[in-house]
Length: 241
DNA sequence: CCATCATCCTGCCGGC
DNA sequence: TGCCGGCAGGATGATG
Image (tube, rainbow, N blue to C red):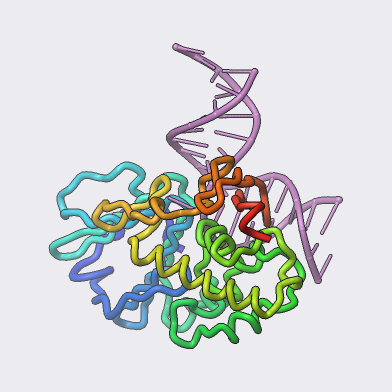
């Protein structure tokens, strides 16, 4: 793992290796390089990638630097939870944990049947399983709460108690929450910004996340703030059951 | 096997 | 006003 403070110097690209392609897998950013190398980045809580000029001074919390011929990308991370790996193509999935990830919810093959088959009858709360990256990859705390609200399902409900109709609504709700987040270019509750420093707008359309003890936007009931699966959780006791 | 907890870090906010 | 505990979008390994 490359995770010290030393800048990564690259020639045309990373250590002289051209970037072949960039993709996302769950919450991982995967950058395929020439000569069978792969650069993998996980932003975790506060990580950011920021495009900057070559001569720009170090950003606040800058931890790593990717230097190209005419531009640089700074990996900044206030809480230092984020990770950067440089791996061999053969072993990058193993090394980073990408191999454990479940289905991609925004791919065409993610159907209501696929979702229901993964979730049906599980022991433990709905929220716990939505957050489990080995079933569906990429659902975080915000989107789990929002999806539960859209589906009318309490996050602390036992997954095994959901009927087929509930599972179908939850599937649609997950898609709606994620697609909305993408469309709004991210949820900037606190730190999130894109590579050009631009904040997302998704925080403006959240129904429950971050609204604990405020009124439900649908029915006016005071939203419940609690802890489910070890994570801060908000739901409406009236709209969700 | 399961759920919960501590941990990695730093900053901020609310309550006292 | 100022200090301090608790909490924060994630993930993992330990604990009971």
